[in-house]
Image (cartoon, rainbow, N blue to C red; front, side, top):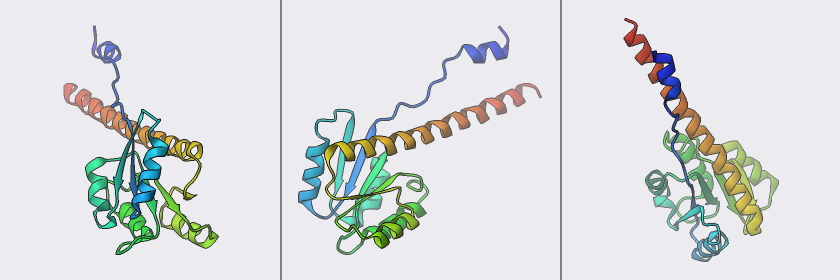
Length: 165
């Protein structure tokens, strides 16, 4: 068996990711409502952060596949957090869904301009929230797996070059 045949016979294994949601909202009642909406979804792991000052730390610790983010919070508002998440390499590409009571178009436009991926007026119906969580999470998982495959391809090419020297 030559190198090409050996490489073709090895299974290509990409990391299996689970959907992990991180809700950042200072209102415990909203945290509990979202938890109840997601509870029937066995494949979605839910995390909650009530303190916006701890949000960045929690996101890096949990590595969610999507973040739900309130805009109106004390000490650190959601728009500022969107900026912070987009500025940090570990969270730069993470999908951010803004959850807000505000329906104003200018607020929505600002959130998108800062890097939010989606905007929902809270609290949405469970079917819509779950659909958006799944959609954004799958897109992010696809990105992670593509990056993984690309890194594996580069490594494989480097190994082939080293063998041929």
